[in-house]
Amino acid sequence: MAPDRHDIELSVNSVSYRRGVESRTLLSDFLRHDLLLAGTHVGCEHGVCGACTVLLDGAPVRSCLMFAVQANGHELSTVEGLATPAGELHPVQQAMHDHHGLQCGYCTPGILMTMTAFLKENTQPSEDEVREALSGNLCRCTGYQNIVDAMLAAAQAMRAARP
Amino acid sequence: MKPAPFKYIAASSLDHALSLKAEYGDEARFLAGGQSLIPAMNFRLARPSVLIDINGLKDVAGVDQTSGEGVRVGALTRYRDLERDSRFLASCPLFADALPHIAHPQIRNRGTIGGNLSHADPASELPALAVAMEGRMRLKSSAGGREVAASEFFQGLLTTDLGVDEMLVEIAFPEPAPRTGTCFMEVARRRGDFALAGVAAILTLDAEGRCARARLALCGVGETPVDASEALSSFVGQRCTDGAIETAAAEVRKMIAPSGNVHGTADYQRHIAGVLTQRALTIAHQRASHGA
Image (cartoon, rainbow over all chains, first blue to last red; front, side, top):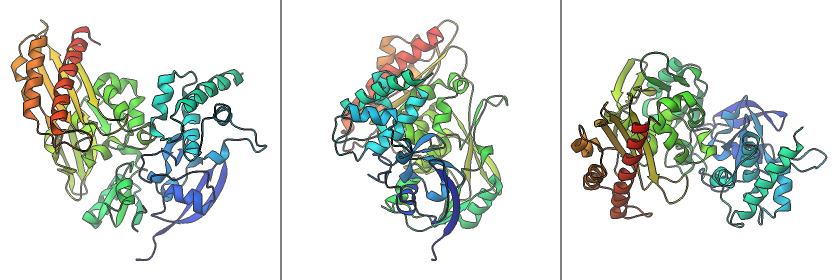
């Protein structure tokens, strides 16, 4: 069977791309191998670990549970788009740094994408709500406490920065 | 961990999707949220040779409560949209209890009610809700449409009444009667995991506060969602006393035959099902009494 290929057009971190993809290419692999945006990590490839979380039209989704062809016409955001072009970290990234919210860092891109979307929607979360929001992202290093601390601090920083 | 090759077709309309399914038959699967299908394809447990992507079909998504036919939920409605629809949750409060238990926010942003019910995982919450709420499943094929009661739709492990050329396009739930209280509860080892047991209870009281009608369905304890409403037959017409609720819970423990798994033995599942029945009935009764 000849590979089933499709032309797609999508935006990633506000940059437009046109590419041909095989229908079975997962969105996670497309981002990493075709667009060379390797910040999106691949952990379990069956939707359990959350490392590959990206934003699809602003909503966090597992990029390993979507085919690249399905992203045709959509807007994606990945961890590469969080910091400013000048290198200033997003408040959630800064808080993860300040609170030692990562050790090996493998789960971090997925956590950053999940939590930036969450904190945009819930600007004043309780600790319980932060833990609930984090429940779909596995981290085997930190025991989560420092991530939770970082998110509560990021929420505060984001509130303070608002005009 | 990569899917086997397949042919991808984005359906342009419901008719297009149904005619493709009629054409390709068993070789084709509908792709909705993909949150169960794509993991199975990544593991190569599923190897469909054609995927019919229905994500562009806006007319099978959304909730309609204005038609006079109860609460009609389009199959492509995503969990997250239901979670944020306060009018829907007010009419179907079992969903307010159950939706947060379905996997994680990232999965709920993609997963759809129709995909969930068509997949028919017995450990999943929604099939039990559909049975407890006496949902009507509306199926369509290019040859026509039909309606099936939820209790007849789920036929076995991952097996439904759907014909090879049919799609579940809508689920219709009856509007709840006055003085009705509901409750869904489950026990899972971790947040978002499949339940060891879950219970959906619906109680309707009469004007004197006696039980007029009672529905109970369980997930995770059989090959299909289990309709255990018969266990409640003893207290229809009676007051829902603690004693009556305990008797019902004992009946449920006797009625079910869970198989046990790596997370818990069959006895443990049975025990949990009993405890959850007791708690869910108690809360459903409180909600029915206080109109909460």
